[in-house]
Image (cartoon, rainbow, N blue to C red; front, side, top):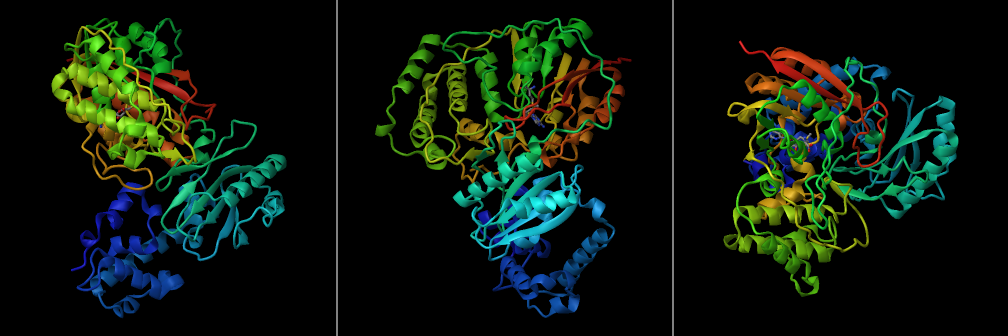
Length: 605
Ligand SMILES: C[S@@+](CC[C@H](N)C(=O)[O-])C[C@H]1O[C@@H](n2cnc3c(N)ncnc32)[C@H](O)[C@@H]1O
């Protein structure tokens, strides 16, 4: 029977759904998931394509009898489809215009799904009020987009009439390629200029095709509007992410703290320090505040566990106060970095410096293409740099027997930090800039290891680890939103593991691994289990207040109130707050952004 599993993996709708979400799938692919299997001689994809073709715009009114006319659809499948349609209709009937709130690129796309498979180019404008409620949807033009044809009046005329606070523009590419064309960029620039003059916020410009969405980043911080060609899979961050986060409905009464902790980072010329990397959620800039609180609130203890350690910067400072440090993160790249910086074991500084010196003398002209350059060359890195990176990584592996374990990890970490300096990205690998020319400039520097009295390093799921460890202070800094770290830093993961998997999509990601429940709806339950299982004298939890963010992907998964409630079960909890400028695609100032630190003194019977 023609089942979904018979379709080549890359084309399988279920896989694509899990990887990119429903908006990345065509109507027939979504239907294929619902139907599940085909019949002999007609696989499920062909069957669903046939249904979509046959009923077209009448699909929503389809009956069981209509479906039974199609060979391959029996009564059970027909009922499945018709019930799903009836269910969706039932929910939609209950919705009024007040529910048409556009808070994300996905919301905008779902309001204009009719243009996704049009054969002609459409430009559609959504007019929104100050609370992002849809006031009107208007087709601005049909036919090739051209700046000489599109007049801003057509967009901003209705905006003035409707007193709209913002507009979202959507444009379809019938070719299927959602990369902005030269004409698109010219039109966007013209619209942005006009929006500025008219005082109407151009919230986003989204290019859609049947299977893909591309939301254009606009740098609202520069006075000169600029569009960035940004290439990624499916839905990516958009200007929604750059909008100011709203003040949380739940204002937590956080104690403010007089900072009295002075953090002096290590500085050794020509060496890379632990904090010298771009990492979402790094607490490097908050470290003085965090340790002002920890040193004031937690009685002196011996051991400190950093169980969502990320960059490890919190552990690096903890190592000055505690004799024993436990570090954990489930990413392979972070695990290698911890071994390099904190790990015990012999290593020879001159040997490392000489190896790195040799790597820096490599001429890419003499190198063949390799795994790394074939996938990432001309995308995340220049062709020449990527050839050297792939060569160096291979060489470290081939030389493994001549290196101690610490030396091996020092070389890997030095490579990971060095590539971060030249990556053609905003700092993570969900997307890369589309450029004709990417600067070369690969230059490897050695990392500078840190002295720690006693360290244990894990690469475990935190909830499993919680049952195994014990520490005086456990620091808990989970992801706050649905952005998966393993997907954001997949290039570092691929380079560390070096098992050379097949990579998929525009962003060239491997099959999913280490997908965190803290980025999903289960986050609250996982945190409750984690807190319940941890054996510590003090629990210190970091979280921020972006849960009212307008972008779905940057909305918080757990509210501050929920965290406080979970912690109170374990002991008396104090909350500290700090105003903070938050990372957001490198650009935004979240005026209302606050960081919170919860400190719980655990009750012991
Ligand atoms: C907010 S970051 C931590 C940042 C860190 N405190 C710093 O200063 O760099 C969260 C980290 O948790 C890791 N993580 C997420 N879910 C995890 C899980 N279930 N088990 C282990 N690590 C996890 C991610 O890989 C990420 O590095």
